[in-house]
Amino acid sequence: MSCRSEHIWIELIVGSRKISNFCWAFILFLGSLGFVLVGSSSYLGKNLISLVPSQQILFFPQGIVMSFYGIAGLFISSYLWCTISWNVGSGYDRFDRKEGIVCIFRWGFPGKNRRIFLRFRMKDIQSIRIEVKEGIYARRVLYMEIKGQGAVPLTRTDENLTPREIEQKAAELAYFLRVPIEVF
Image 1: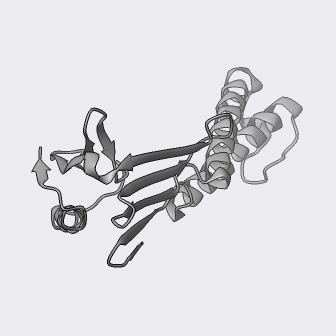
Image 2: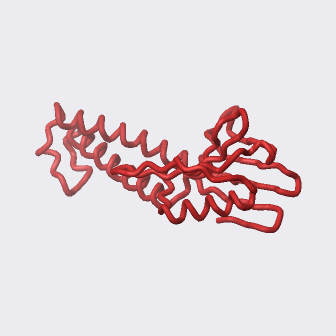
């Protein structure tokens, strides 16, 4: 999602609040809870889940292993829910030709550096770079090359843009910033 005018371009960045993250966190929570309940059922000798009779699963070693995997899954699920609630990775890219400034803002994990804010002068931008790696794990990332500071990524690594979409985005941004495009 982006907002553009003659002098300002604002690109909103979606963070952890994606449908896929909600689905994975929910599925992982339910599966982990099932493992913990089956492990607890085998320890107590009572049927906490009616689908699996507790007499079929011995507490040692199956019940202990299922409880361990269930607890580990609950920790991972709680981590996913925390990143979703904190919306880690969300933010915006703001390109202002009138003031000659580029601002990049992202939300991180809670703590001292939760707010990640980068500010550059537009005259320090050397180019827009497209990095393409094809294969099983194809990756297409858009970078902004800054004099003396290296490359700043503008797209998420898990943002699966087609070659046409990444080229279009790079061309529009390079035209707006009046810088060249590099392809690696």
